[in-house]
Length: 238
Image 1 (tube, rainbow, N blue to C red):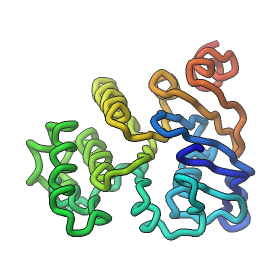
Image 2 (tube, rainbow, N blue to C red):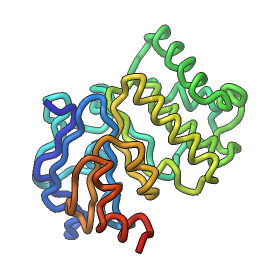
Image 3 (tube, helix red, strand yellow):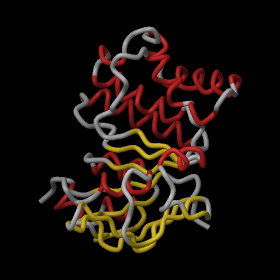
C-alpha cells in the first residue's frame, strides 16, 4: 500500500478545472518528484493534498486513510507537512519561534519538540547560529532552510516541498538538495515539486510530468531523465 495515493483527483478554481483526473502514488521511503511548466498544476496538487484546496471529485489516501475531506490542520496531525512555495516564514518571529510554530501538532510534548529542534539545527547549522534572528531578516536561502525546518518540526511521515530551489544561488541549491537527500535517508518520504527538473530527477526515485492539469508521463526518475520528450521540454536540450 502506498503511503500517499491520489485517485482521479479534480480541483477547480471557481469554474476553471485546474487538475483533471490526477492519479499518482508515493511509496513509503521514496523521493517522488512532480515536474512541469509554470501553470501546469503542480502547486495546486500539493495544496489539494494539504487540505488548503478541496477537490470536487476524486480521493486522496494517506497511510490508507481518506483525507480529501479533512481540514488542513488535521492532515498535519496525521504526519503530512508542506514547505510552501515562497517560503512563507513568519517575518516578525525569530528562527526559534518559527520552528516552534511548526511543532504545534506535538502539543506539550516538550521532549519531542526539543529533539526535533536539535535535528533541524543539525541539518541547518546556519539556523542555529541565527536562532534569535527575525525570520524576515534572513537571506532567501536561510528562509528556505527555515521553511523546511519548520515543516520537519511536526515529525512528518511525508514532507512535501514546493519549489525549494526557487531564487537561490547554485551553491545553495546544491546544499538544499543534499539536505533533502539526508532527510529522506533519515526515514522521511518526500514529494518534491521543482522547476529544476534535472536536479529533481537526479534526486528522485520516481517522477511524474504534469501538463495542463494532467499526468502526461510517469516512470522511474532515471528513465524520465533520459526520455527524449522530457529532455527537450524540461531539460533545455535539443
